[in-house]
Figure: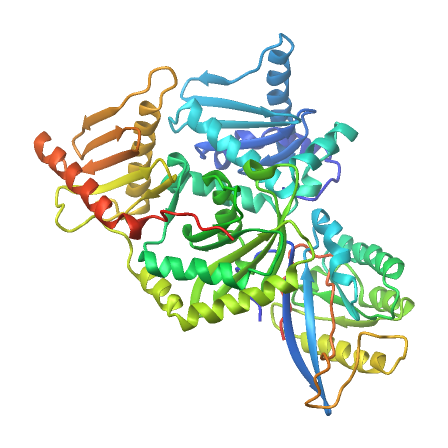
Length: 179
Length: 429
């Protein structure tokens, strides 16, 4: 849902959402972090123990696309466990003002083994796919023995739920992505 | 502020030179500018600061010219305009106003703007940046905060709390307020390093729980109000944000867990700590607080109080409006504006008159205790003593003795309702 009155994120906001894929229920714990430079020093707090990252940029602003590249480097440097990565080009409602080509972005995404999506938070298109992809990527991840903090459990067990932390970055005017 | 740093072409440069000559620009009565001591634009209240480079150059020249003779420029009276300067380390703030405020008032407004900048960055960071690079472009770090500065300036112009240097409380029975405070205290009892727990709604304080020995001044609370009311995005999720409160500690950030209580109760809870890893414990504490408040019907009590705006008591027919400040607690009362001050324009006009009286009473060097003024539209009285300040607007055709009678009635009413109108004790964790 998009509200026209939404102001940019200050600091970071946190929300959870539940997604069902086949028989698995996935609880996503999402950090939506502010893109501004002054909040950059806070970032490690959010990607520590994260299992996935959404890297959101604005297709009408090339600088936001370059910004996600530096975020990817930071993640690669600091996060040891494998991450589900999704690159998301937002604001497809402003197609006529597009400055970052789909081809260029998806090639970049492929080069860092990320999935590529485009979305419009304004018209609420494409967002569900991003979260679904994250969720299914995490189910795959959970089968990897190296990933310790991600487990699929049988219903009614007391173990912690499958979790995901995301770090959408790069856009200052980015509205929250909700499920 | 604007991110574009592309060089201007000659044509654009000429257009930029003339930007502050346009009517669109000139129509505003109160311009505010921030620049670095190197003369770099940081903020302009109206219009793109990068089109005003020459104007910023003049401001910087004025400041440094006076500094050369080991002095500091305060204000320039230029016809109908008043230009006020505030220099704080590497930052210069300038106000250009045609709306007849006092130098002190405009200077206080600039201090608020400066505090907002420090609140976003901390004084330590501002100082360090300019020590390392004198010509740093501070806009880089303030991206997104110009909105907060704009919002704060509107607050200083539209709400009496700024002039009165105090906060308004939501009227609540003392037992409800105590239940709320106790809920916050007990749900947070196991959390170390929690400094403040603050519950607010709109620009009004519901309760403030603090660590022993620590206090918050109204100007810091105003920054908190400003951050909350200026950030719609807080309404959609739980938030975790750094905030520096310059009068509490300008050197570092507090970390704030910010969230609205519930969809059916639009009060905002802030839990402020010095520990940046406390998000999840605070998030859990907040859920418990809401549970207790719902069970004890405090959410309903808050909603009910929100629906009943403070008004001048019915039996005081001669009074249109008043402002009252309790000096000991720095809390104030400001009833809702009613006819003939129900329009934004007339309400602002009245606020301006309060401001003028306040300035006259607090004049440096020649303070007054009492002002009584009679105009064709209203009678106004300002009275200050050791315990309180009161400013009253009477209907225009009232005799002096009726005025005095009404003042008495108001004071008696406030005394009687005191424990509901104010937060008389500041509970501690």
